Amino acid sequence: MLKKMKDFKKRLVSYYKEEENKKVAIFYIVLRLLVILCLIREIILGNYHNVFLCLLTLVLFIIPFFVEDKFKVTIPNVLEIIILLFIFSAEILGEIQNFYNLIPNWDMILHTLNGFLAAAIGFSLIDILNTTDKFHIKMSPIFVALVSFCFSMTVGIVWEFFEFTADNLLNTDMQKDSIITKISSVNLENKDDFVPKVIKDISKTTIHYENNKIITISDGYLDIGLIDTMEDLLVNLLGASFFSILGYFYILKRDKYKGIEHFIPKRK
Image (spheres, rainbow, N blue to C red):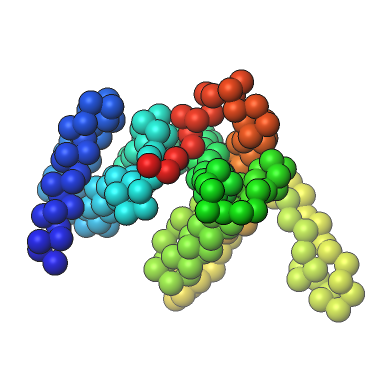
């Protein structure tokens, strides 16, 4: 096991020493140093949940190289830099530095980008098969684009499943709550007639819980994650649709849309 880890480390160092990967190496080193500084700070503060997030980020940073090394594919430098920046933005800036709350639509921006990146990966999986002589079935551009879109949406849905599971089992708040001023529910009055009761202009909600404790939400009613989940999936759909359309035209005229190749992994 130790020998395998040493071999992996040697291949990782060798990879970033290659001339075409030096720009990525500089970006990787800068982000890694920032994460390590954040890790030291969180250890001093005793925030061990954030310490775990820092360690997780350092592990996730290795994924692009691991994929290239394990599956013998080449990830374009532009795509690799975007992936590294996405991980840093989600874990360090989003969770630890609280950008999800400090910057409006930070979560939506990341989920849109995730939809785009996942569609690019799904597209490359099919395009690699489509361009190899060992695969005797050639899929149409519209089918490849559709698979790319479905792959991205599946990734987005699985992630929302993960957030829901973490919130219910670990008492996290990955599905961020929203304050709303209108609700419509059949559970507010007669449950048997299935006619929803609509309440508008909610200005305050009082929550009574254990030992007669009370919490008051002064701006409206608390939605527990549904709006966040649906918004995440909707912007994921936008990102997936955007790349799938680009991918469709790329297959039709590869020479004309060469810029898209910066986002598509290729076989070595």
